[in-house]
Every structure is written in structure tokens, then in C-alpha cells.
Amino acid sequence: MSGADFKAATEKFSKTLSGALKEAGYPAKADPAQINYPMVWLLLFILVLYVTMVYGPIAAWLIELFPARIRYTSMSLPYHIGNGWFGGFPADRGFRAGRTPETSTTACAIRSSSRS
Image (tube, rainbow, N blue to C red; front, side, top):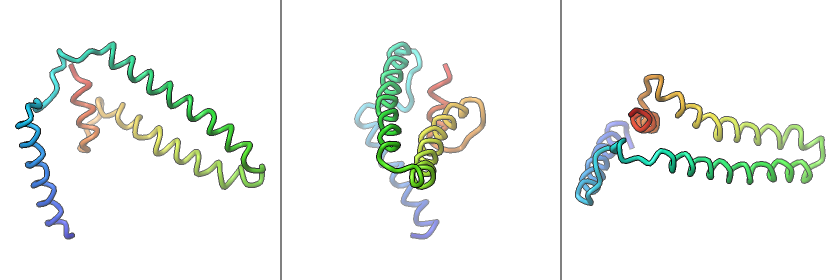
């Protein structure tokens, strides 16, 4: 698919999706006055708690699964790249999106929802 075809397909999909959402009764953007901020923080805390319940045992399991000569390179490197770049970096990127100009959809969505 060429760049022009991809752009046309993306625009067509966006229009179709926007029309379907509008027809279903969804608003164009969230109303900050209707957001229950304490519940959002509670749900985020619960999700972070679930993540910590998973990552701790994974690290301990990987340590016991492999001998030290393998563990230091072939397990440590992908584990830390996966957690740092794909686990922590997007969250940090979204956190900074409210303070820096961004053009990505995720950053714009986070930025627009963080302003009141």
C-alpha cells in the first residue's frame, strides 16, 4: 500500500468511525465536569498494584530459572529493555504530553483529558 493509499484509507476509516460513534450517541470529547477523579485514581492504583504483583514474581522466577552465566546477558538485557522501553517509556511519554507539544494521537488524548 502506498503512502497516498494509506492516507486515504485512514481518512475513510476515521470518518466512518466518527460517524458510527456519533450515531451511537457518544460525545465528541469528554466533559471534565463529569469525570470522577477519585475513582480514576483508585482504578489506576489498583492497576499499578496488579502490575507490581506480576513483575516481582517474574523477576524472581527468571533468576531461579537460569544459571548466572546466561542470566546476566540473555535474560537481563531483554527483560530490562522490555520493561524500560515498552513498559515505562510510554507512560513517561504520556505524562510529559500535557506539558510539551506532541502530535501523536495518544499524547493528544492524554493531554486533552488532563486539562480541566
